[in-house]
Length: 287
Image (tube, rainbow, N blue to C red):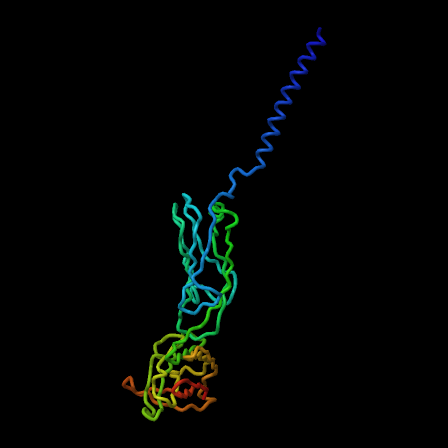
């Protein structure tokens, strides 16, 4: 009799253990599944306003961003630079955009800055999309930052003028350039002083294609700060860029001094560049 009771108790214990084991197994199987799958979240498409990968200074590269269905959360889209020679805020500007809740479209802009400074072609690589970790989970995984963009930033020169940029290493020193005309109509005439502003670089665009053909000179006003090294970056109307470098030193070079009187006094200005204007183009040489 006691033996039968023991068997009943043992059977009951085995049944309880079996039920608990099954519940634990069922729970474990459910835990390995994703709590919420992002596969049904909205998909993102990107459409650019410019084809190819070449953008000229002054242009804006615009991506239209669309969701295939709205959500109740805001999404922030941006462009992150991943490489290239261009520098943000000097060569380009990125304007992140927030796609508001319950909307499906926004525009992301990359502006190529027109700095009016002659320079060689630069490059910039970008990844475009969502960079917030929490926000990425709100869109379909197939749409996570699919855009990789490699841009060429093309320099733009003034098509009707010769752009002359003059720079030197020591920004605490004030140097200037002025332009003289020596054409048949205007022999040795003070022509332009836009390069005498206190900036570094100084930029002058006093010589136009519409001006009389002939010879022009670019003169340095050194204000007794020599010797110093300098660099001229010259943007021709046809889009080409020319660079001329040197050292200005009165003790080692003989410069022609044209006294500048346009400001009411007499100020030294030394010829360093010669510009020959043919009527349709310019040839610039170092003196």
